[in-house]
Every structure is written in structure tokens, then in C-alpha cells.
Image (cartoon, rainbow, N blue to C red):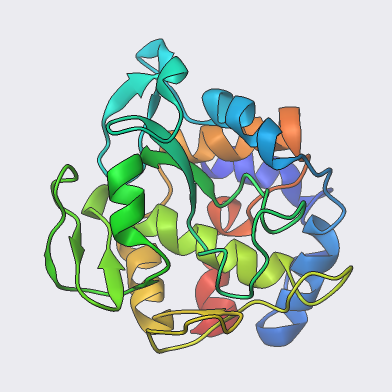
Length: 236
């Protein structure tokens, strides 16, 4: 899908091309921070479009379990799906405020109990198997998603670290190479996220999701889906 990404290079991404490091991070922030914003209630309807099962339009695909589930089974009950903040909302204490708390680029449908088990943990390797989400693991301070979405998770976290730089009352979100970050505006483990991004490149589902968010909701893009190499250019 390089052709789809290149279609934006001469227009959308043009100011960032050829840059690296902090200069690239700043250029990307300038490009993606002009997005439209939605409310937390509106996120429900957005996720029913962005995460629609390509093989069953009545369902969404849950991030950690990969389960296809009815769009209408959203809520807070057992075996329903709810809105997972991949960048845990307590990391920077932004809650569900419009902006980082409602940014669909990092909000995904997940099983209620799996969402609860992940909690606000940072991302890292290892732990015990997660009930109801085969291939995921967790321990007291970190969560490891299944192999099929490791890169997706990494690119969502990287997006948040570029998009939110302390402007307009939002926190300045940053990657670091630790776990157990608590309420600090930081998420880790950076070195592991870089590995996941390289090992699990964007697939059709992720690219389509990026396009739908751009076309129908926020009108901005996740740069690390269009240009996965930019992860190493900034943090490598």
C-alpha cells in the first residue's frame, strides 16, 4: 500500500519529508494537530465505522481478542465491548476530555473484562495469559498484546506522543523506556514498541482505519501508518 501513502506525500505530508529527529516530530505535530474533534459519546458511533469487520458489516473487531462482535453489543456488561484508551487516560490525567480523551486514532473496541485487565498498564513483553484474549499476556505493571496487533498498538502510542505536545490544555505526552509510569504523561516501553512496529507492519485493516478516520471523522492521519519508517527516524 505504499502507493496510497505516496498519494499524500506531495500535499499532506510534504512539510515533513526529508526531516528526522525532533525536527520531524515537530513537523508531524504541525500537520496532524489541526484535526476535527469529537465527543466521548460520539466515539461509540465512530468505532462502529472505523473498526467494522470487513467480512461482517454488522460487527466490529475487538483489538486484543480479535473477536468479531455485534456493533450493538457495546456497553459495560460482561462480554460487551467498550472504548479502550490504548494510551491509558490516566497517563497524563486527561480522562475523557475532548482531545486526547476522545482521539479515535488510539481508541479501540475491546472486550470489557479484557479492557479492565489491561487497565492503565504500559506495554512490554511477558506475563501470564489473558483470559478471553488468547495470545495476550500481562503482569503487575505491563501488558503484551497478541502478535497480530503489536505494531498497531505501537503506532497508536507513537501517534499520541507526536499529536499531543502540551498545546491547548492537553498534556505533553512522551514515550519512555520504562513501565509503571502511573499518572505521568508517559508510556513505555519505547524500545519494545519500536520492535513491535518493525516486526508487525501496517496491514489492510489498519490502513483502512486510518483512511476512514481521515475521511469521515477527524480529518487527520496517523503518520506511522503511512510512513512506518518515521518511528525509527524519531526514536531509533
